[in-house]
Length: 161
Image (cartoon, rainbow, N blue to C red; front, side, top):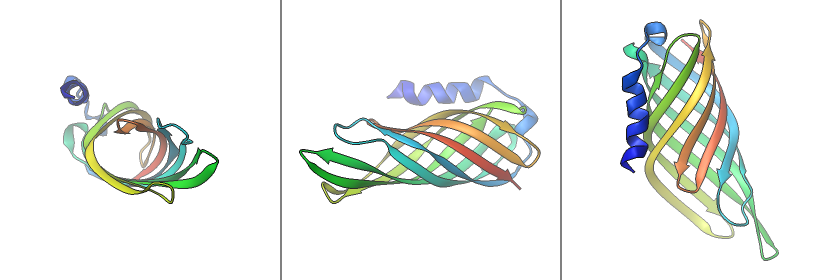
């Protein structure tokens, strides 16, 4: 567990570039897919939003909400599974037009289904990404670990203001 936290933090400490250092807010939308490593469950399509504020030294704070659904098919019984997450992350982008991103934070998830009921969990979440930024927009491709058995790959389009 310590390595999973230390690796993204080490990446933040190793790189420093002022290209993304202009302070300000940003907001955007995300689409993607959650990979659910549970028997009889299909991967979930995801949609969501991200809101953030960037500080100096390429650091930012982000609030991200994602939701999606998947299908469980077991023993001839089929049901939908809904997945909703809300997270707050500390994020760092390497700067320049093309950049590397890392984020670490706390995520709350809720999984519900007519088949298994509803469960909530809160825990550590982290991710890595690549992107491109223009003067007023960002395009990012990210991989995020939601929990031990669930990860997400998302594409985000973000407006800087």
